[in-house]
Length: 561
Image (tube, rainbow, N blue to C red; front, side, top):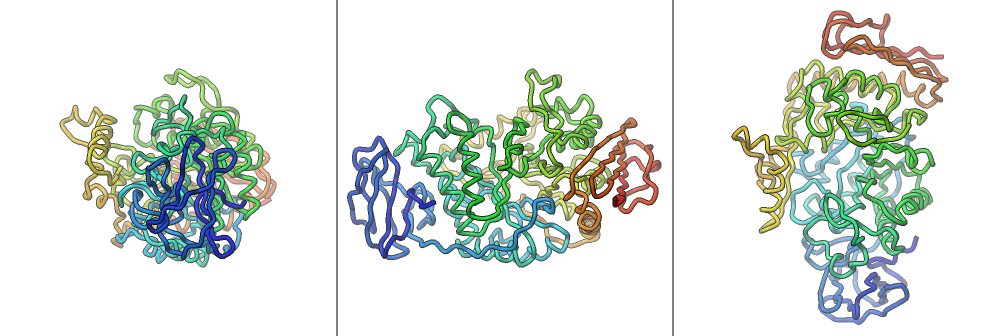
């Protein structure tokens, strides 16, 4: 796809493009020089003009100067001029099949003490040595300030400069590929952040005036130019940085006319560039995008919720439907993938989901912790801080040894107890609004005389950094990770790559016995969560605890066909 948004070199010059159908006049401000742009059909503005790479530019729309919404690189923050940067497509790494994925979710800014792409690159061999096969980077598109999760991005083509340069990102991807790791990028296409999103002012047609998301104005995917913006953005990351896959944030908010066609066309366009993997986050638990072949998998919060409630007995908010019978829900998740498939689920007052049990096991990305589930807690508590460590270890082993695609949140492999808090770097009235909004999400904290950590404080950000101290406990968790993932690669992967024929999950109080039959063999997992009992599997090839004696135990066996 030839880009129309932004700036690209063409025949020794640069072509600049902007969609602003309601504008009366658009000028290119190139190094301070005003150059009128030409109005074209369907609201596009265009100009071909010579300029050196690295030159700074802005668009002036009816007198207002703004950075390029499709800026590939900024000269400073999100309000600064954009900078011309020529495409330098990175060489691709070897393709890895989806069935082999073991994903490590990573926030670049808190993964290492340095918080940089270069520092993360130095840890790729370590992750690969533990058995991970992919990293998933939380969003990198530039947002206001230096600190943040990345979901408040406003320049989605431009790598966030606090992490490093575009070449630093290419070097991280190359280091991951050398280590045998695929790289997945979390991409937000359903909203923009609250500071620096100038499209609202210069192109209000980009947004659906009749719909809002929880994070701001909804995007109008009925507009061809809007669909093109996001398709060009996704293609940019895949081609320019050799990204192997994308996780699309909150696709349930990619809604309205044109949205379904957009998602289908996006998948087809991306796969015309490279054999990329595509993951969705979709609260609806709907199978359609996975059934139709364009998308490999979806995040499966149901598995997380069942495990979390079984270990913590929490029953607030979205945990409430899982508090009725969490072990039974875990049995459903092991049998069907999703738990909620359109059936009544008290106290939920609406139906959620549709039948998904026919999907392959690789259509579900399971986790027991994610940035969302940890970071959306008032104090960013990891599971080890609020549940029995033995139970957490068993749940972690289940995640790694069940046939679904496992995803680990950074630090789980080390037994981390450092929090992962919500943090941002806004200023002025917006900063205060974020503080107030964050505190209002947790009224029970104030009732107990405590306060939610200030999301704008540097201390909140610093507390969220992983602790890289090496001690016996860290080595125990790393050993568990290494043994489980070696077992997965050696014994389980041949089964997952074959067709599934049947699955049965039997329950006895807090114990489960799951039995999957594949064309290539049989996988059995015996699991006890919280009470002694349950029947183990004779000759287990992998296990924690002894079934029948320990309150938290797991044993796993694979029988080849």
